[in-house]
Length: 368
Image 1 (tube, rainbow, N blue to C red):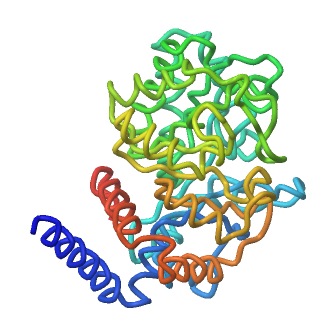
Image 2 (image 1 turned 180 degrees about the vertical axis):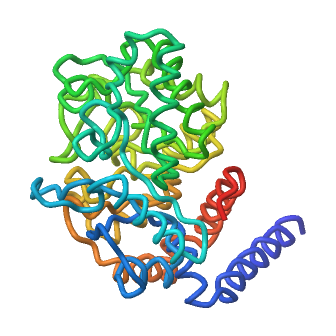
């Protein structure tokens, strides 16, 4: 009898789930998908006829990412020419958006900075250089950076980096001075200063690159990166300490493969890494955003259907398509995700879960 009742309850649950999916029309579902996307675009100025404006309104996109130059042509301006131009661009983006819009950049300091002195912006030292300063000076540095972002209409910074400087041969973290050091306490100290400065100006911080990129030898922009032999649990310490001690609004996944954590998928596509480890074991409650899904570590090894299905099912809430390394048609992207939902490969529950986290972020930062 108990088995019969359990079977009936299970069947009823499945029917309710099916009904829930059927009650959401395609246009609403497309907007729920759109909220989970952060995309790059090519313009330094926009108007009501610009493609990015039509995409923002059609899908209520969750965010955009800005770059100063095109990846394959550094002489060509993309989105950032000067403070005056940038303020106008971000003002127009928000005015055209009917819903809250994350306007993001990679502004770490040092060599990773889209708002550069040559465009009239104040320079920010690299993480390595900041770590040579005391807390008072570091706060001054990051307060100035956060104010610059706010004044120019940026409300999301893909920083700070909390990777440990463990491998001197690492060109993408250690070699670019993007880490505060090899000691997790030092990394946490400076990362928290950066995060507090950003929050005080209403800018969302994004810790990166989970579960750790500091011991790697390769660059995931260029191809497959296996950290199985170099990674250690010490690389989780900054995340553990920050999640326990402060509000962490967003974390960015890394496109690194680590057989110690998942013997099949790289972190961005791994349920073991993103849900079992980050959410269930480490207790992270915020938004997990992917690193650029057009990096070759992902795009060269998986097709678009696999990329969106695996990443969303793994626990990723926002998908980043920067349109720097390749060009992704956003209409086609939304259609692919919609198809995967209708095929039952992505559950509506996962879409609703991510949308709820994004809405909570908007409320926390009073985005309107």
